[in-house]
Image (cartoon, rainbow, N blue to C red; front, top):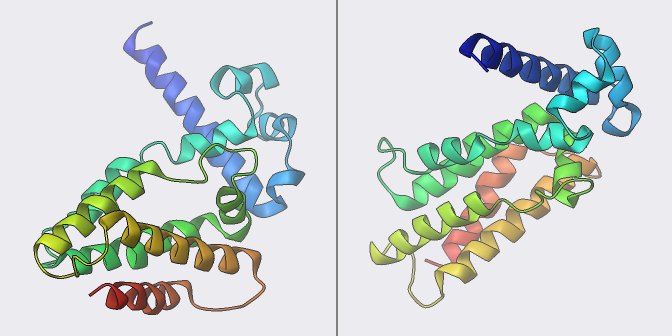
Length: 189
C-alpha cells in the first residue's frame, strides 16, 4: 500500500468517525445504525466495516490518542505543583472532553456499555505518578498509599461525571470537579 492509499484510508476512517459522532450526538447512540452512518457518507456498510468492527469500535477509536494528551497535560511545566497539575487535568482537559462528547456518550463510557473502556488505565497511571510525586514533594501526606488517593479521586470523578451525564442533577461540571476533587486532595494533605 502506498502513502496515497494510506492517507485516503485514514481520511475515510476519520470522516466515518466524525459523522458517526455527529449522529450519535444528534439522535442518540442507540438510535443510530451502522447503515445510517454509511448512508450519510454515501458509502457501503462494507466500507464502514472495513474500518470499524461496529459502533462501539467507532467510539473506542475516538479516544485512541487521548493517552498522549493526558500525559502532556498532566506534566504541564507551566503549573508549578503536582496538585495543580492534577486539578488542571480534571477541570480543564477531562471536563472539556466530557462536555464535548455530551451526556449520552459520557454515560455510555461511564457504564462501559458496549465498550471495554470504562476505566482509563492511562489516566490511572498518570495519576499514580502525579500522586507519588506529590507525596515525595510533601504536597500530600504519606499516611495513605498513592493507590488509595488515586482511587478516591477516580471514584469521585466518575460519580460526578455519571451524575452530570444522567442529568438527574443540573450543575456546572468544571466547578463541581474543582470543588469536590479539591476536597479529596485536602483530605489527603
